[in-house]
Length: 262
Image 1 (cartoon, rainbow, N blue to C red):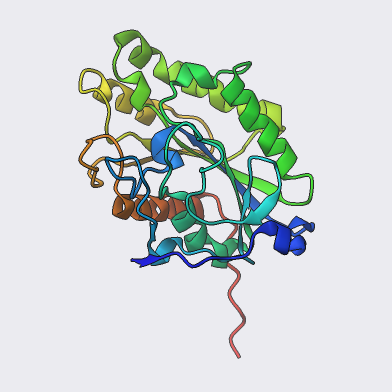
Image 2 (tube, rainbow, N blue to C red):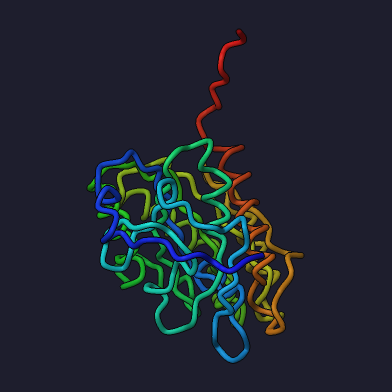
């Protein structure tokens, strides 16, 4: 691991506002998508950025809270999930792992810590903000290629919430595809690794039971957690980003065109 190196902001890189053909991915859910890797118990981020999460100003861009494209860097959600301290999440290691295959990667952070699935229903602020940001992100050029979703810990405390999870998630998937006009938008959801022991298995079961076209579930269980037993460590977030990338490249990316033999 190494400390991040300063990179110019988008204001110093006007070409980032140009109509590059960005392959855009929405990052949504709650705190483990927003990223708490490297955030200490004193609520400060340690500033350590693993090699797999290093910025690449020409190949990995980020849609800011003010809806402008800029060079992506950790913490990706710092101006989105503003009520908590953000650290390393899975987004940058995902982007670094897919960029050689897909080209310029555009990340649209939307995750907010501590949010339940009912807060992501159509008409609710979080959902409407996510859809609005997604629509705005393509105006300068680019195509939305997938939604990466990691949420559910906040639905593990009450039986009703856990039992309603599958239906609520399936409704969310249908709504976001309809509202974005992308009926087969790839969705990669993460089966939760932590939460209230009372109903965590019920929520995980609901996540695995979702059987809709172009929806894939990967499992975060077993990835190392911080001492709070809730949030993934920096190391775990790097691994999760690679798992998300593998799921995307295996299931959804266009086939790799190999150069002809000489």
